Image 1 (cartoon, rainbow, N blue to C red):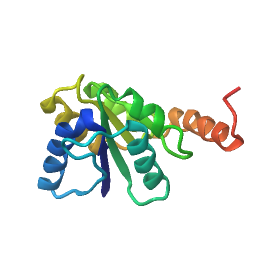
Image 2: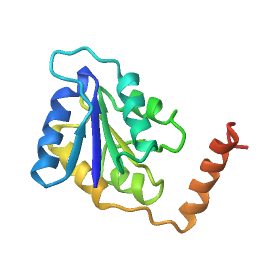
Image 3: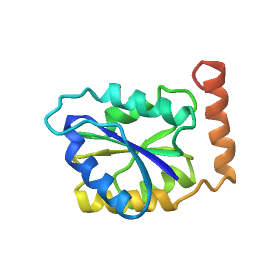
Image 4: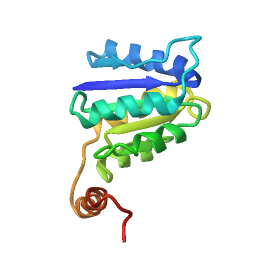
Length: 151
């Protein structure tokens, strides 16, 4: 599995830690930055990474900013990409199992490094379950294809 990871300047330290953890476990990781001391705007990183996921270059991605909120909002602007902000074990699992999110966002100012490592493991081990959730995710995809909001 190929994982893309990116961060703005607020998330660099956590990104670097997660890159090390993932590589040590044998996971293929593409690091999209930012680097320590580099000022980076989260929409630039989120859109670059989400577009790579949409093109099929990576199966999943992790995006990190101060709260995880901005990265999720920006990544969700890319058609075909579902990004979920994750902050606990349940949200990490459900992001995949219920919502088929290929992108996980974390807040470096909200989630500590040990918890972040655990959340990444949970999210990577989870797969979309389909069932009743498949119908709901399909409605989101249909609205996206129409280019207009649900309803």
